[in-house]
Image (cartoon, rainbow, N blue to C red; front, side):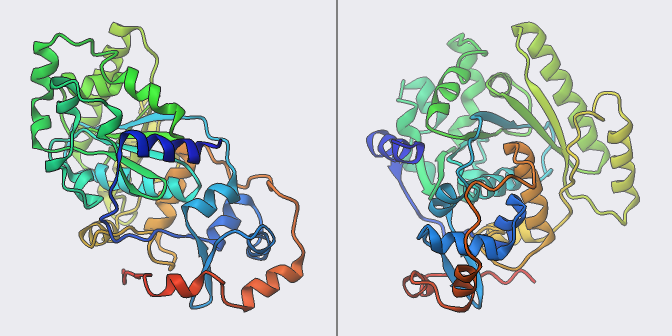
Length: 368
């Protein structure tokens, strides 16, 4: 039984399947070809040869999570990735959201954990957590961790959040729960069901955020090119250093520069500072996330930047981030033998057998 089937059984036993969002994320054959170091014709041929479900819109071919899982067959090393920075407005939640979606389009099984009492990640997935158990219910009422999980899209599950999670610090203190185990044990245990578990922390420090950091295999700090964000980065890094020393743990740390605008002095100065800083120069991801209005636009419409087929800088940047975090290094060696060219020509010139049932429900977002 593969991981996808195991996870489906796991959710049907413990969790809830709750598709309420309108997103329809897509992996184009162009992007698939780039990730494998192959041609579009090669990818198109393989889809036909293996009889994988695909879709065709206005001459553009794409596929979704289930096909991606069968097509790529990546062997991921399961990891808990925590997004944390002591500063609001850095675009952290948008990055978590789009990273999770892109990871699912590479075939990864993703669990998102919303630890921010504002519940922005929960709202991005169009979920109402009022009737759902969240982390505070797990700690106070001993609610089973697994039954708090909701399936929100193919390949993506969510542990939602609501305002009551603001009391997590107080509960952890009153119950004297071990910070190095309270989140780490359940999250690390769930890695047998998921390829990546991504945690969205509130932009603050406290016992709950510390416990999130201690649960991580990798902690990523999104920082924007402004003074207060860089100060927040210093605080987050210092806090992690102290936690690692106190609990004798080693947690990898990375920095991604978000909302980067190459034409502004602020962005250039921030980049130079991070590149030259003894603390951060070896932790800075090689690709920035450029400033784009696509992120807030699509979330406002309960969609994703990967719903549209048109190439954009936002999609390119999140794709680079996803490859970095999933450790997909392009170009990859082909997984299958190269199909015949005639099959590619056939696919590129005819309609998909799956197109008719999909065409009516496909919703494109105009992001221009």
